[in-house]
Length: 391
Image (tube, rainbow, N blue to C red; front, side, top):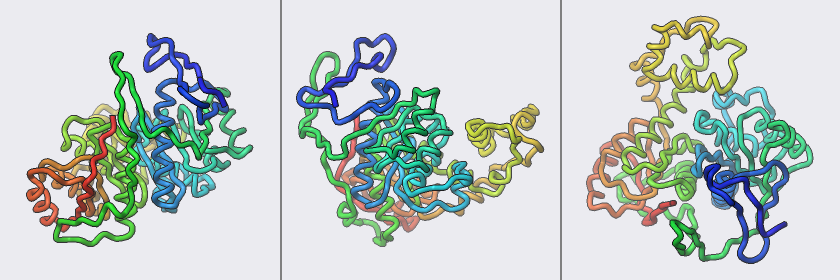
């Protein structure tokens, strides 16, 4: 390993020179293929920390799909249902636990995951590489690769796919630095351990957290630890189904993430599963078309006659009333927030997306109102006492 890797440029082409380097010692990463850029490495190091902590907390293989230094999705291994395999476009593949975790991480918000950076907690196997080989992705970081997986990935993107291997035993210095405007910032690393011990303070009338809810709340909090703030994360069955990142208003985070969670659930509706797509439509175009189909915009597509570009037969519209009726069946969702909820409107919005369990720091002067709204819907909420801002 070297102590420096030169990069083509920084965040933008005009930002030169660019490199990553260690002040002391050698870099804990090797580039096995391709030429990762500045943003690629930001995604790689943030996503690796996320999946490493998920694996440590849950004891399960974990994966993340990153875009612009925030997770589009993250998941621990939970066997996928036939429906989820279908909406993630992996029902024709053999899936290992690692491949299943990545399919879930990428599949929850496939539009945002387009062109992602993938992170795996465990060695990349043939099944995961086969899945990645047919998706649009910028690169991957993992602690290792089987020979077969490496061969598959090296053939991707005309041989230019970015493959990074990290030393899983690397421990960074306890103090970190960042330069902004020529000025160096220094702080202690966020070494906070996130586990079920943070979920013991339940101020709501409902104090029942199922084992699955505890797992999902831990997944949400670890995901938020590496998501640009403000941030909110909805989780179900071990996978993030909606991440709202980088919003200035908490309720906008809750709405953005909630809308993504709704889209994830709407994709499982019979009306969507049975859409008569033309056989020549690519997966990204299907994703985009489904996103339009489950929105109010689809009526304009029908009116303009553009449906023939995507469908063999004109499908019936998925009406607003039908969508709401389907969403009313959504339940068992867990939600984490990186800082306290200042108003009960966040809980009102979360309830519409099937949220039954919440973890947030607490400490707002309106905690009583937030608790009251939770009690109104029978939501169990834990005050963690910890903030998870990430900038």
